Amino acid sequence: MAATRHHDADPDGRRDLLIDAVLLASRALVGVAARSLASVDPDVTLPQYRALVILSRDEPQTLGALSEAIGLHPSSSTRLCDRLVSKGLIERSAATADRRETLIVLTSRGRDIVDQVTRNRRAEISRILARIPTAELEPLIVALRGFSDAAGEAPEPAWSLGWPTG
Image (tube, rainbow, N blue to C red; front, side, top):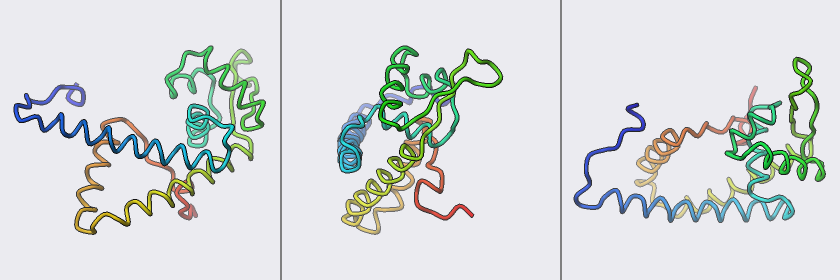
């Protein structure tokens, strides 16, 4: 309950200023994500890419788990998966334990798209961060990690960041 409780009143409007700053930063990051994706495969939408990223971190997944992770109704997730199957980015199969369940995995082409988009995003974010004074980097790291933790966002696995895994 502590993670969801509201903080004290904000009489000087600092939280409003923070909200505005996060909205502006999120707009910049959505732009980075959209440009990175469009440069790799303009036919993959951001919601489809989000599904690919989720699958790249934890596969195989059931359709229900993927629906929950991306916040879509199962019927919408089914349509999204239909499009990804037709693009050759994911494969579906019946689960061995319960044949009524559908398992979803990335194809090698789907994994390649996630890897290339991640490399493109890293490169563009690196260029943006190079414009920030070194003295401001540590507080930014702390703030962004705190924000990500509060949002429940899992860190990227080492392989997706281009770091060696072995």
